[in-house]
Length: 222
Image 1: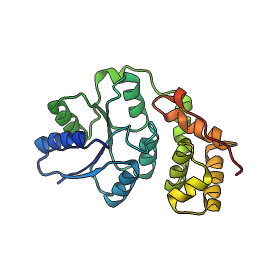
Image 2 (image 1 turned 180 degrees about the vertical axis):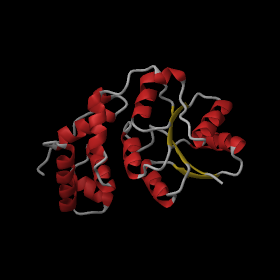
Image 3 (image 1 turned 90 degrees about the vertical axis):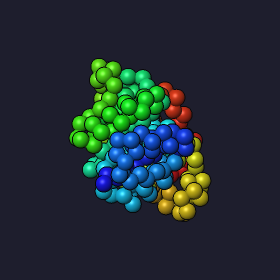
């Protein structure tokens, strides 16, 4: 009896995925998350899950960073990206960063079922245009490799830096002291090979869907 995880912040689309899965795998157990934080908790609670269907644009997600982070923490978990971003380059980047498949949200129920079945059988699945798109740039792979070294808490702090939060605000959100946040920031800079938080956010921003839209965070004393 396979266990599938669905991570998407839109209830209607989660319902559509549930229906597609039920048609091809009526005995499957389904677990759902509506944010990145909820997803991390869910994956920890379901270490033997057979497949994760991951939306790229959930709250707390920044491009391919959540995909890269989950692949580092749970390499045994196959991940299929399900997204409304259907550019061939986005599909190819998802595959290059470890996804075993990419399903456009515009796909019909039959295509969803075929893709899920193929992936559970051990194959990869993506529209043919994804395979002919240019591969992810070398600097993007380099950024992904650096992010894999972050602990879950450091990754959360980095995401909050990318959202423009200051140390005090991050501490409040995480329920830790400002000194603890500063220690995390120091470790993040070291692991990413960055000299300041702006550079760290820009390195992580290479994994954004639109890297040119990344806004550097405010600087403050580390």
